[in-house]
Length: 114
Image (cartoon, rainbow, N blue to C red; front, side, top):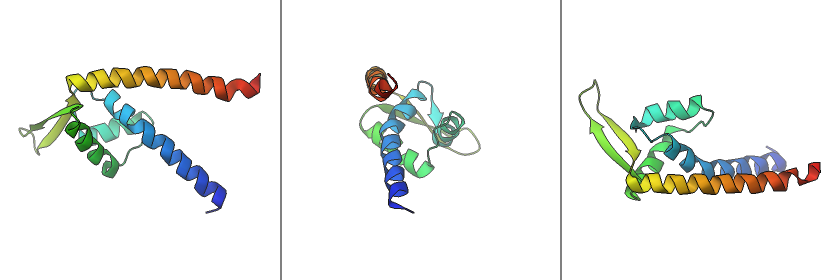
């Protein structure tokens, strides 16, 4: 891979890493288990590998942003995740911040078009 492609790939990964948490929180207003979350995000254009998602879910739960509950009545046990009260507050704050950042970035990146 050329240096240019490697630099772009690394920058794209950094950008994605910074947005995955917001995307995950946005989908947990209703309980979902991990694999269903992977599928939902993928359907909506945000591909997240299970090896990335599960550690993130554990970290968010440890931080108090998610609650989880095991469902054992089905064919196999599944751990469902949903936003905690604090998670809802943090999600709203992150969404507001994202909106402000998006406006700023749009302004900065569209200055050339003027």
